[in-house]
Image 1: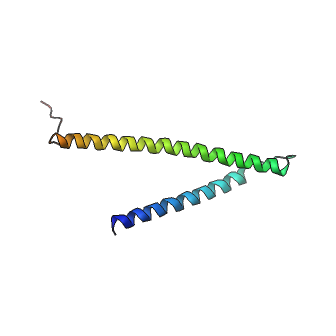
Image 2: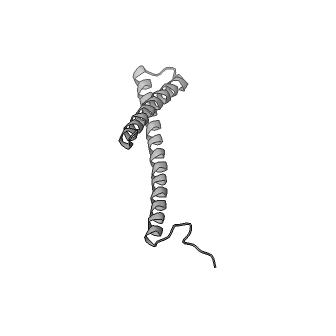
Image 3: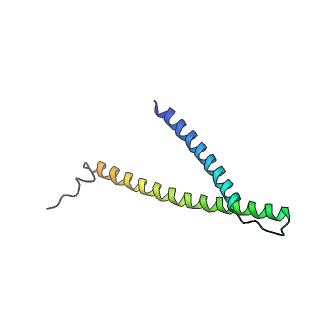
Length: 98
């Protein structure tokens, strides 16, 4: 399997997982909400939509924070390895104790 095929398959997998998790999360949020007695149907629809939008927005922000932290960690690690390679050693071998 080539790296291009792997990249395409990984992208498709991520899209499918995102769609399925959104659908299941939306279904569960709708099923687990309490029934509001005495509300007009439009009001109930608006509240359900606002709840779903806010839940999605919070999840998107949390995901962005986690992914940013992971990317920063990987970038820092790559910079450490590249700096050590430029000096002619490895990161673990460049710190000799005397």
